[in-house]
Image 1 (cartoon, rainbow, N blue to C red):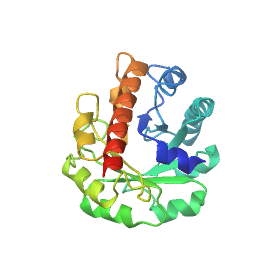
Image 2 (image 1 turned 90 degrees about the vertical axis):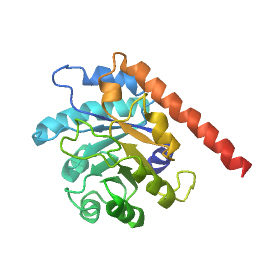
Image 3 (image 1 turned 180 degrees about the vertical axis):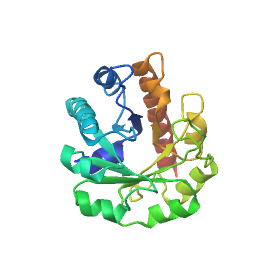
Image 4 (image 1 turned 120 degrees about the vertical axis):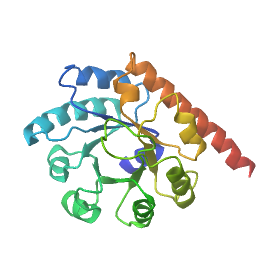
Length: 228
């Protein structure tokens, strides 16, 4: 089921339609089997038909690899495209309004950027997961200040990643192979990346390396839990 795949998900990729490179399908076919668990099409200001056309490519690749795929912001397009996941930001439709559009069968995610938003996300009853960040500033979110590593500490306290009853959450914002260990050290078990994969010289290799780092940390954390 989709909720089970969300619980098991560790690596979440956001990607635009790759219009300049013309290789969205090829990129997804390379990185999804290498370890991406969720892929989101995120490109602002697209016309609806343009976005739906790109979502068809994402949906096809995800279906062949058995991974989740997500629509960004547009609850109406999530319904039309049949997306299993819809992700919204603080300035988009509220989560209750999104739920009215997509119904109870869809996975709904929300971005959080500060303590108040994070606390509200943990308490929300109609939300399936949330993202925490940006941990570091990133050009994919120009003008948004970094939330910093301390916000991950709060997320870990309020929604312990090792607690099977806690809501899943993802660290996001400037995360790559050089700094992912800092994020994992603060308690995160799931991450969202963009440039770490899309701008890598070898996207499949970068994906595999990130996925392996996340798996290895899971193994270590599971061992600590069993010893308690």
